[in-house]
Length: 140
View (cartoon, rainbow, N blue to C red):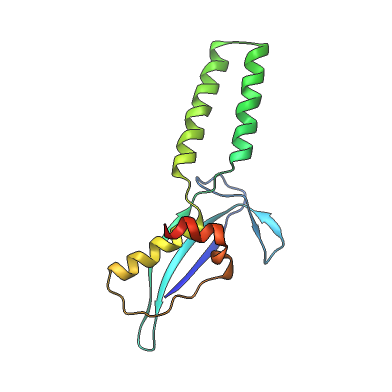
């Protein structure tokens, strides 16, 4: 079983769920979809099993934006300002709840392959999936 994540690059468009991530092959930040995939491979067969879309959550950026909205409300409390703050606060909470790091997504794909009864003994993946903190949250 192979587990990998892939950046699907997009340019000059506003597609939902794009992430701002560093593409190490280009050594710069890009706006891609980041897809974590599972792929089955043996001597006789090979096929994609499934995928999960990684939804980026930039907590620091969200909190800065909410702090800016709060500050502007202190200086000029308007109904429109409160509405914008409330919508942003709800959007922050939804995004926070939807966020799942890539390692738990990969672990879910492996569990799914086991549940499907695919005959594999080895899982190959990039080394960064083994960062200790990521592993603790993925397999618990």
